[in-house]
Image 1: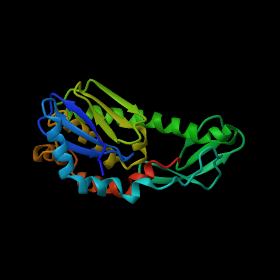
Image 2: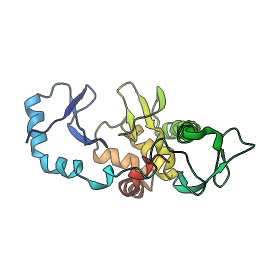
Image 3: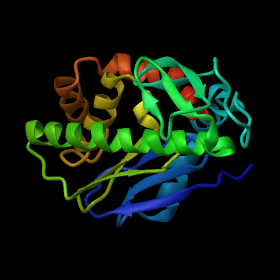
Image 4: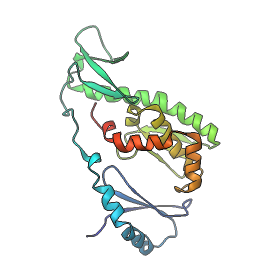
Length: 227
C-alpha cells in the first residue's frame, strides 16, 4: 500500500521529522536539500508507526451534539479544562454570559453553537495571546505575530518568519495544557527539531509538560466537540 504524505521544506531545518495531523494526513518536515528518495526511505522505515498513529481510535469519534440543533438547559460546555452547565435564557439576555456556568439567549436559535464558538475565540485571544508574549519574553525569543485561528488539526504552529498560531479550541483545555502548547511552539523558534535540547527548553519553562502531553492524548477529542 502506497503511503501518501506532504513534504514541507525549511532552510532552518537540519533533520527530517514526520507528524500525523488530526485529519490523519502525514506531513514530512524536511531540510531544503534533502532528496525525495531519501525522504521516501525514511517514511517507509516508519510505516508501522504511521499506521498506528493514523488508526488511533480516540481521534475519530463522533461529536455528541448534532450540528444545527438548538442548545437546551442542562447541557454542558468545556472551558479551561472544566465542564460548565448551560442555561438557555428566554428573556432579558442579549449575549452570552459566563459566571460559574453559561447563560445563552434562546433568541439565538440554531446560531447558539456558532455564537458560543465566537465567545470561545474571543476568550482565546484574551488569554492565549498575552500568555504567549509572557513566555516569549522569558525564553528570549522574538515573535512577529500571534494568531488565533481555526486550525482544527493542529493545536499550535510556527513559521520560519517567527509567526505562531493556535487553534481557538485550545481555550477549552486546562491552563497548564495551554502553556505547554504555547511553549512547544516557541521552543521551535530556538530549536527546530524535537531534540533533547528542545525538550529541555519545554520542560524547564513548563514543569507539567509531561502531564500536559498525557492530557492531550487522553482528552484531545473533547476539545473538538461542538460544545
